[in-house]
Length: 172
Image 1 (spheres, rainbow, N blue to C red):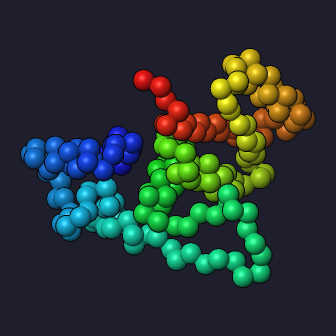
Image 2: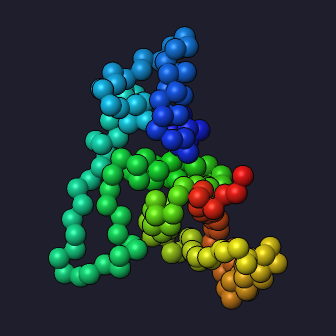
């Protein structure tokens, strides 16, 4: 539900929720408070429903440095839920595609995930795409990055590719 309906607008999420709740199920759905949806809940370690807000840590602005604006990610239910899903999908070695409007922290969330890599096992390189990016340009860029590693090191690392797509650029 959290992945299948993640791109839905709030009103459509409510429709999907009503679809789930109106059909017979063996699931013991959480007690939803007014103004909330099933999207606010997850199954905890004990197998019980718990509110995603339970996983949101308090944000503390660094007192001894000034972080780059684009790297700041204030924890909230949406990005905690997205981080959980990125981890879950990546552990299964499946592709991760983040879709959303500009400014919804897609790049910051991927960078946060990449910052958790063990540099002895995984490396990361960011490539920015635009309307001028061609498949050939992408291939040349990837080939250059791979060749820059010594061949003996190449098979030591795990490579993950994340795709980020701004949905407001979609032309239908």
